[in-house]
Structure formats: C-alpha cells, structure tokens
Length: 273
DNA sequence: AACACTTTCAACCGCGGTATG
DNA sequence: TCATACCGCGGTTGAAAGTGT
Image 1 (cartoon, rainbow, N blue to C red):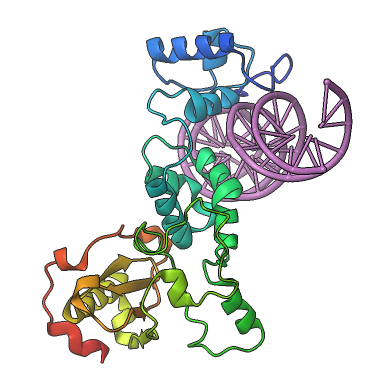
Image 2: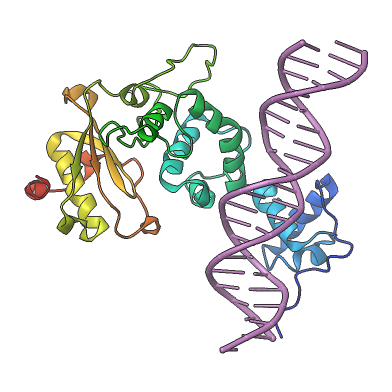
C-alpha cells in the first residue's frame, strides 16, 4: 500500500498554458503559498497535473525570475560552471545565477553558447580547443594536449570575449593561449605528489599557496586550479596546476576567488617542488 | 506574398532518489 | 521491508516565431 496517485491522468490538460490558467495558479500560490504540488491543481481549479503546475511556476511564473536573454556576465559564468559541472548539473549552475532557471540556462546553452564556443574553436563538451583534440586523436603529446578550462578571465571583455560580432573572421587554428587570451609562453604543469592528494583541501591549499608565492591569481576548480599572471605584474607565463580531486564534484567549488585575498603562508611551497 | 527552412524555448517525458503508508 | 507515489532533474520535442529565397 503506497501513496495516493498524484493526479488522475484522465481529463488532465496538456500543452501551452493560457493566461487564465496562469492567473489561477499565481493567485493560488500567492494566497496559499507553495504546498504539496499534488493538491495544487484541484485547489486552484486547474485541470493540470501537479507536476505541470510546479514546472509552470518554477520556470515561468515565479516573481523573482529575470526575463530576457542572459547577459555577458551570466553567460560567462555559465560557461565557467559548465566546464566544471557538465550537462548533468544544470540545477547547480542555475543556483549560481539568481533569477534564472535550470531550464532557461539549458536552453540558452543549447541554442546560443554552444554555437559560440564551436565558432571560437572550443569544444562545448570538453571545453578544450577543437584542434587540440584532433591532435590528441592523432597521437599528440600530453603537454600539447593541456586541458583548458575557461576561467573568469577566459571570456572577459578585455581578453577574449565571446562577442556578438560574428562577421569578423575567426582564426581557423587558434592556439590555446589565444583562446585563453594569455601570453604566448607555454603552460607549465605541476603534478602533485601522492601524499598531497590525500584530500581536496590540502591540494587546493597547496596550489593556492604556490599561486600566491608566484604572484598569480586564478580560480579553483573541482579537479584543478587554473592560474593566470596578474597583467600588471609582468609574470612571464600562465601556469596550470593540475591535480586530482580525490573526493568528487559534490564537494563544492570556489567561484572566481582572488588568491591574493587568501591568508596563506608560503611555507608549504616546498611540498610541490 | 508565399513558401521553406531554421531557431527558439516552453512544456513534456522518463528516470533516479526520496518519502510515505 | 516493500510497493508505490512524489519530487526534482536532464534530455527531448514540437509549435511558434524568425529568416531566407
């Protein structure tokens, strides 16, 4: 003996919502609040299934929703988060963008961002340059195939914006540095010793400490830390510290923090050399 | 103006995890 | 403990709007 069914499938209306249905649903939720969705259609006088009501409310009628296309900053944040979380975390991505729904972000990704990335020569699934992947499939070396995750500055307006000027011819074979807007110096890769990989926090702390010591800023990711030189400091090369995440992506991540803001000593630097 | 084709996005579907009886 | 419904999620669909010829 289980629960009662959510709704009688017979007589349940499907398809686009009418203004009258919207009004009924909004009136009900505004006056009664969100209770169990199963009861909503009946109490609100709607011939809809509760699931449909919930979807309509969360994706369209909620008063705190923003309208219109995602702006540049939101788009960049989506790209950044998608590089870490992938397609299976739209709800987590949406949680980082107030007023936006997972459905909206998913749609925007599929209709706009994906195409822009492809046009820029970046694989929207792996976030690596497409030509790098060709090299990899034809036997490129590990260093040639350095993974490139977009970071805060990756798509910033000053360096490498995803702009709307689609008439401008694109470099058919952009280098990874061009894609990132970094200097032409090669990336360094530091493999962490096993003992440092004992926990995510110790890895991150060590990498961040190294970054501070190197005069870099950057972003923390679930499985790596991307480092970029401060433009004014004249640091010669971008650095990438690659590390495993022993815990998994459920641990959370750090959004666009500045290394210089973190109070870390430099004593752990020796651990990665 | 008319048609074909493409793009957009709201809504649906089905699945997995959780709650309930 | 088990069967079943609820909930939330990601993937997909299809009607409407937009664009090209």
